[in-house]
Structure formats: structure tokens, C-alpha cells
Length: 356
Image 1 (tube, one colour):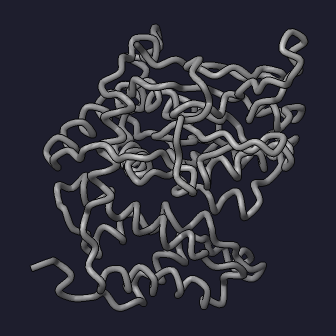
Image 2 (cartoon, rainbow, N blue to C red):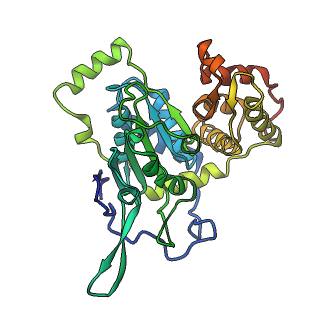
Image 3 (tube, rainbow, N blue to C red):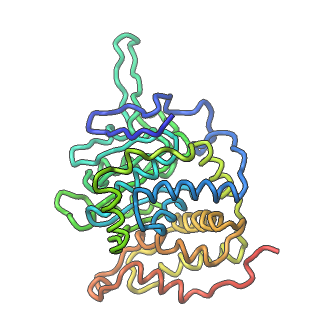
């Protein structure tokens, strides 16, 4: 089976896999019973290398962006890709989705999109005399949300429960989503006509935000040579599958993080709440996401333990988009990225965090 991209327009509501939108049994938090076997760090590194190489066939010259996307995937998180038009936001999302043989759906967010177009709707069946639930495109392992800020806040809010609790509630009934589950959303911060800014609660549910940026001259020339007459997405084949990714995630969960490093993560996040230029600091959810991302970063580096450098590597993508700057900070042309880097320089780094 190969990955499929399913476009969702208003009124559509079919599941990409055609399977029931809920597992037979679940725990109280909506997660399925039973855990898959872990894999070795060598196998994790090799699988991640194949996925990254596959994505780089489409997104040329952006290895750091691809690595953050993999970190987010292995951290059981969601990725927000924010940048100007034409730099490959949707291509990154599609390439990552097609590199994994699992259920994939795509939602084109528009102002007239309704919450039921995302989550699904209950339809009356005249033959049975009852209502049947038609799952929406959110019932997939990887959901690509294109231009998420073009939908109304009402429709954006349909993703809140999905992203945090991996479930959908429709007409008092709860349907659990398949695992792994990841939302990759794109938005354009420049062209603001007809858009709705993501509320803080929505941005806080994204584990990381990346900006692709313009390629350097050599990478852009290579892109012209290879992509001008052919779309590499057309030939992209999966190099892994959903079950393997699930096992990789289980391996990342087992990465050791020493008490000193945990305290360091808490101190870094707490420091963002005390900076004068910040009107709203990072939340406790940000602390959890920072630790999970650091574990994934450590695993990708071939280690089964987290060091402070792992936190430094993922701190800006994980924390910057959650911060709300004051008017004075904007006037001084300070960015959230600058604030996070200043916090990292100010908070003391723990020593001796490697396990004995």
C-alpha cells in the first residue's frame, strides 16, 4: 500500500483508509491498549536517515528543517510550517507524508470550511432508522492542513481536541484517532488578507514551528536543474510505514533524561514568563513538548540519554511560536527567537547530566 493524499473540500468526509474511526479498546486518555516493541537506536537512525533523504529529494538544501520535522514526528507532536509563498511549505508536508506508508489526508483550509468538514458528521440512515457517523479527513495518521489560517476560528477550533487528546467528539460520541497521529499545518504570515490569526491555544498545541526560508544560490540552481521539468513528488515512494514509526516513537519514549536536565528544561520555560519583553510566556505544555522533542533529538543523535545541547537545539522551534511579545518589544524589533536565545544564555546549564 502506498501513501495517499486526500483533498478535503467543504462537504467531504471520508476516511483515507476506509477503516472504522476508532479502536476496539482504549484507555481513559484515548490511547490504545498495548505498546509496540522498541527498536534499537541504530535502526531508528537508519529509518530516520531514509525518510530525511526521501524528503530532501523534494526540499533541496534544508537539512535542518527536515530534521526538526523528524524530531516532531518522533516526539508525537504536530508541526507548523510558517513562511512566505513558494519556499516549499506544502512540499515539505507532502514529502514527509508520502515517505511513510500510512493513511494520509489533506485539508485545504478556506473561509467557508466548517468544523464538520474536518472532524466528520452524523448522517441519518433511512434504512436503519438511525444516525451513522461519517469520519472526516482528520481520521488519518498524517493530516496535512494547507493554509490553516484561512479558516475561521470556529473551524480552527475543530483541531484542538484532535491534536491534544487524539480523539473527536461528535454528538456526545467520542471517536479515537489512529496512532501515530500528526498534523502538519502550513500558513503564510505575510499575505494577511482573508486570514485569521491562530489563537494562542491553537499555536500552543503545535510542538514546533519551522520557517523554511529561501534556498542558497547553489541549492536553488540544483532545484531548477532537477525540478523544472518534473515534480519529484510524483515519484516519491514510502521508505517506512506507520507501524515502524510507532515503534520508533516507543523507543524515543525510553530515552533517559536526568533529573538535572529536567530541572533545566523547567527553568528555561519558566524564565520565558519573567522576561519584560514577553506579555505571555510558554505554558506547562511547552515544557512537556520541549522534553519530548529533546528526547527525539537525542535519539536521532544516536544517544539513549538527553544532554543540555539537545534542549538548546530544539528550544527555538518549540518555544518561540508560543511567546506573545509586548508592544515595546515589537517597536524595538525584538523577535521571540531573540528572546528564547537570550534565555538560553542566561539560565545556568547543569553539569554532569550524563547517566553513570
